[in-house]
Image (cartoon, rainbow, N blue to C red):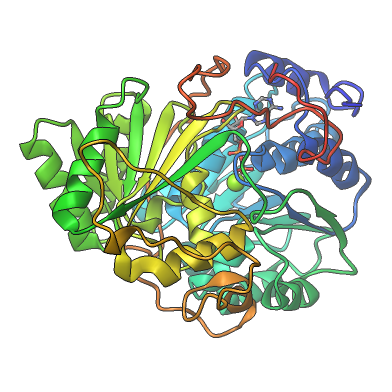
Length: 469
Ligand code: ADP
Ligand code: MG
């Protein structure tokens, strides 16, 4: 049984906004988090990518802000927000801000501001005056707090999005500091891909006896994303496989993931040389360039983005039909975040992984993490040599546990993994143009299954199939 947003008791302007966005039903995570957060208390939440977590925390918080200001009184021009949302990357901060702006379209008197590095100080400082809700990356927020451009002691609720990523990026101390600055708040919500021990530790230091909401986790399968593996003999072979998939007639937009910043540039260059509309994105680029490139992907002006893992989380561009792992991720769990860039909002998607023989242990680690075997396929004319196509062992079939490379065990450890390249604090982009889902895109070809993601009872994997409304 899915309850509607209305039955959750959300204020009229929010109901109007969800309707305008085409959200007919709450997603399973929203169905659980919204009523819980409205009642109060601290919560930690885990659910898979693309399942609608942003609205799950924005709606109850905005509802509280609306309730606290029933007469739409103009807010005083002080920089003293009541709600604080922390994001690990600038991209995510901008995404969450855009979602929040969409949701307050019909609510008067609520102001939203973003604080993040890479943007001019002056404009940010004037924007935060009078803002009720601030979305921030930790570094710049502390900066502004230290210079007394913002006060956090009026914060009533703090949200940490992508908490596991926060720890990966080394934000633990910053978060503790921010926690102290808003110690009088009465609610903390934390969202994380996993509840690994290091996350639980953070939760204990920030929250009061938090409740747990755990839906199909990042490790569970994405039923609406078809996942395929191709063994390749060499980089040149990988390029041919890449071309094959980029020419797929169902391809609207693709994100090609590279292992390093330099690779992302090289791959984008070579795709452009072959006549593809491709552009690179990584953490060493100036913020303005990153903004422009993501914006252009959003607007459909760029078809192919070649990115490092800086783009693996939070980016929500519903028209991305294909994710191609040209280079494998550093950590198995990043695989799940990467492929979660497609198949969003109930659509189906295609995830292709290109691996060479030497990547076998990484593939095994991914399979162990996701508890799913990656289906190896060959493309006529592009078959790998015998040596390259040796299968990996099935997950759980006694193959050696994924060494060295993430996997469940490693994500539990507190030692930080090498950050890879381009993973630095993320940056970039603007609006969330929510496109109405157009239902399953791919018919017949044995490619993606169009399993629904939303609706159902909070146990998406076992609930009866339902078409995304
Ligand atoms: P997550 O943070 O869980 O990865 P997002 O919050 O970014 O996912 O949401 C993924 C997509 O689903 C977005 O495009 C969002 O607009 C859309 N979405 C969220 N809630 C709903 C809903 N109730 N109905 C339809 N689409 C939704
Ligand atoms: Mg999210």
